[in-house]
Each structure stands twice: as structure tokens, then as C-alpha cells.
Image (cartoon, rainbow, N blue to C red):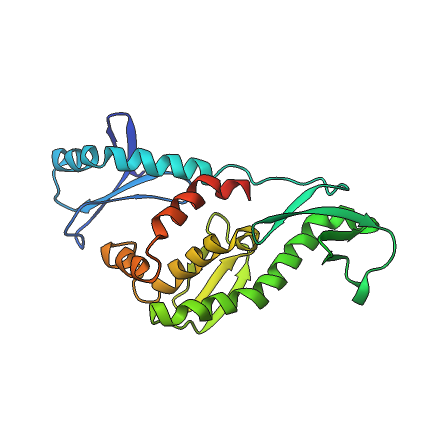
Amino acid sequence: MQEQLIVDGLSFELRRSNKRKTIGITIDRTGELVLSAPLDCPIEVMERVARSKYRWIHSRLAQKELFLRAPVTHAFLDGEGFYYLGRSYRLRLVDSPLPDTSPLRLYRGWFELRHNEVHRGQEHFTNWYREHGQQWLPQRVARFSGLVDATPKGIKVQSLGYRWGSCGRNEVLHFHWRTMLFPFPIIDYIVVHELVHLHEPRHNRAFWQRVEQAMPDFAERKQWLAENGSRY
């Protein structure tokens, strides 16, 4: 059974290790608080550190709550809006076959979906975003690789659960297909964020300094993503 530490109404999963020299607080993907500490660290020291991070913790939990909201669901009806690169395009259901036997396309400002494929609408949109992301995102990565001084060995677009992007140990960058719904500045922030991870695996001071060097206004974009990401 995991040891718990409760400080001023906040519950932390306590993880002790003889390899740790300092106390660290993290918030996992589901919003659970984790406090990691040296094996012989006194409880009162951990409580003091937790209290010193009180405002930061609540700020991050608020962001996490926004992020964990259920994504928008679609009924795939005529006139329904779907985002692509920050712009909303209306859906038009069509009866005639589309070029190349494709069930879905973006054509003259409209998403067109074959009427007899509505029951697979989510699947077709997911595949469409993934395919276009696989073609388009490498261009954005190439644009910022020089600024970050990092070049990935590969780029993949896929479902990533609650993450917009990730940097694998094999130096392959992974991006959520929903990234393709965002405006350009937000996509570029996610790209820079993951490129910097090729240098710095952790979100430490050196990491954010590198991000700022490549993108001085990153904090505004990061905040926008925290506040608006669930809309997409």
C-alpha cells in the first residue's frame, strides 16, 4: 500500500528512495499528486516543502482540470463545425463518391463526408488529421530545428491520450493528431517544446531557458494551450 501524506487538504502519494537527494513534487497525467523524497527525509520537512509549493500546485491542478475535460463530441451532421489549423470548417454530407474513393475531404472551405460513412465519422476524421499531420508537421519541425539545434530521427502522428506531444528515447517525436486542430502559434509551441526535449528530458530550468531562447513568447502560448486545449 502506497504511503500518503496529507498537507492542508492536499493528498500526496509519498515515494521514498535512497537515490534521491532532494524533494520533488509532480502531478501525474490523471491529476494525482506525487511527492518524492530521500529515504530518511523527515515528515515535517516534506510538509514544509509542500506548503511552499501550495500556490503552484493549485495553479497546475486548475490547468490539469481544464486539460482533462472530455473532448468535444460530434454528431457528424450537416453544418457542424470542425477545426483544422485553428479555423472552423463546416461539414457537408454528400451522396456522390469523392475523388480517389476517399470518404472525407476538405474542399473549397467545407469538409465533405460521404453520407453512407457517417457512422464511421470519428474514424475518418481521425485518419484525415493523422495523415495531414504526418505530411505537415515535419515542415514545422524543420523550421525550428535550427533554432533549437536539434533534429529528431523521426516524426509520428498518433493518439497520445492526455499528451499533445512526446519525445521518445529513440529521438522520435510523437504528436497527438488533435494538434492539427490548433492555430499555427500553438502548434509551433508544441513543436518547440518537444524539440527541446531532445536536449533536456525534464522540465527543469535549463529546459525552459532553451524553450524561451527559441520562442520568447512561449509562456503566452503555453497558457493559451492550458486554458483552451480542451475545446479542441
